[in-house]
Length: 116
Image 1 (cartoon, rainbow, N blue to C red):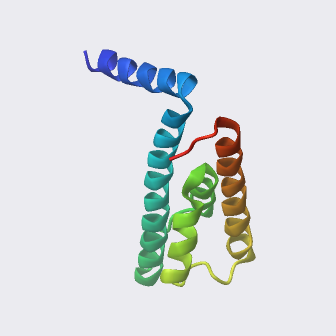
Image 2: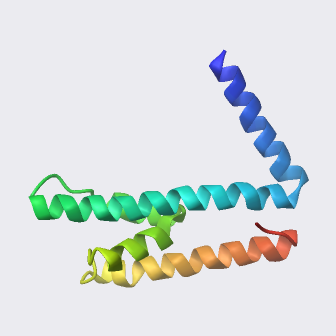
């Protein structure tokens, strides 16, 4: 029964995205908000684990979160917690990923005419 509700929910989202440009912005905003919060939290958690000498979050996971849309949250977390600020992979790579996402959002806004 739960799978059916989930499938109805997903099909409604897909229908909204395909028929109305504004729905795309609504869902993309929510998606980016969640991923950026996760990126900020992951940065804090990795710094916390580093201080305690515990298991760390793999760098691949950090980069993957940024590529999926959490670059702004991770970038803010980097500077708030002073974490990964000496690694060029992060000091250069995360801002580049963030610029890429800004470009994607600008392109979507230009193509659909409405966003957020």
